[in-house]
Picture 1 (spheres, rainbow over the protein chains, first blue to last red):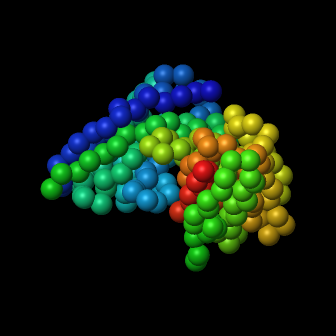
Picture 2: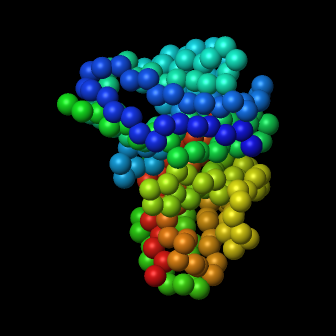
Length: 110
Length: 113
């Protein structure tokens, strides 16, 4: 199984950009990169996903390295509500496996 | 549009008992995933149901089982409960298999005493 590696925790100041890294050196050509986040006492929520090209949506941007062995989730202006655990996941498009790792706990300081 | 709903919110059992957890997906969603999240840890994939069939299961013993009903709701059964089964059990559903954007419920907190 392809696996992801993320830092255990990161800190950010409010209203500053945040770059959350993810390494996935064993990614296969058919694996999509998904990001979810889990706010305290809630189930995870979808953030963004991509295959090869960088992606933007209203929540965040996803920058994917050219060799696809790493990616970065970018929150353009962190708010206190963005404090959560962020999960980087590889989805095997063949069997639709979604394997969550331990994630990165993001703390946002006012 | 109602989100994914799970019941009960909390469940307290003793060792050796059986637990049944229920999940109702978002209307129109035909696939359901089950995950286990032990305290302070990430999500562990349990089961995936699609169109009433079990499509895949994670690395869990056979005493973890489930089913999906014709209305696409799902049930997770855990037999012969052990203390380490205490966890938050999350259900997620999606509509588009190509995108697999999952929508999660708030979970059932199972405590085994």
